[in-house]
Length: 397
Image (tube, rainbow, N blue to C red; front, side, top):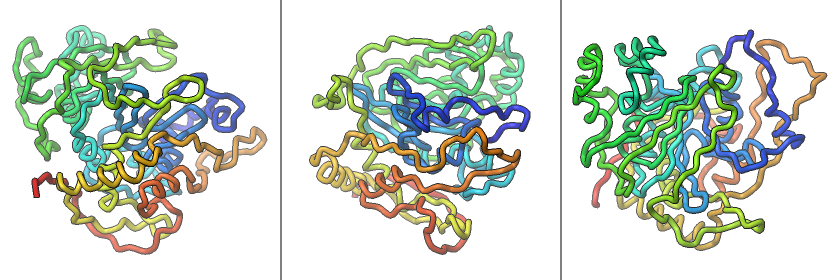
């Protein structure tokens, strides 16, 4: 976990992992910058962190009842955005931070979605989202927010790109340690970046910054054909702050579009958490381009020259429909089992001691479901180091 030694206190998650405690309701989470990154990395494509606690992965889309939920983990850092994942245990002082930095590979996968999303989750706020709310009060209460905005370092540009494309009804974030609500209304054909360039009541010092085009915006795309006319954004407060609400309940209206009339339910009548057909097809199509360090040599595989065309994506979706959907395999299997030693209070952990890397059977079973090679196996063979970028193109060929 990337956190100074003085803040390292064992919480109670180990109780949920061991089975001593269990989440009373289905809990869907994403990762931030103060997580057990090695455990999250074992579930790169998502999985159960503990019974009833599901991690969306580095990026992911799931369905729960009529809701379609998308999320991206980590925080944005420009220097690592276009890099592959070269981190494998044991982490050095740089790896323990870069491992949770958002990668373009995952943003581009979410940008490939063509069907509407209802709820989106990110850890850091989308850049400029505060300008769609009461930014004057926010900047007055948090002057360092305004200083960061003027320096063009407040929020995530890739998250703004995703919000402009996905346009979900709701977007929830954390990271900034303050509660803030905003209503994002975007005109047809305009994203957040283009919308906020209209000065309005934006502070003078920000207008020059707003006129600069985003350096990371690489693949222009039209927004999804969503019936949502606005996105309700909510930034969540920090646990332990004087203003923190221990439990904030939001009552969400029924989604404006039905994704599937055949909504599976469990025996107790509750909805079944399900994989998303389109996301499985995207994941399958993009797996050859996923670049991570080999677990033994710590060398990153060479970049793939693969381009994902619209036709190729349709072929993968057809495969998913025939091999997963029609076989009744969309429900996320409740296959959690502790695969690493549970917490032992008598075991002394040294300050810089790191865990071993444990192969997670959930990831292995996910690759088996997609009938693809498991890139997270402990032994993935030798490879050579190379540079290169992941590229996505859409063509009607």
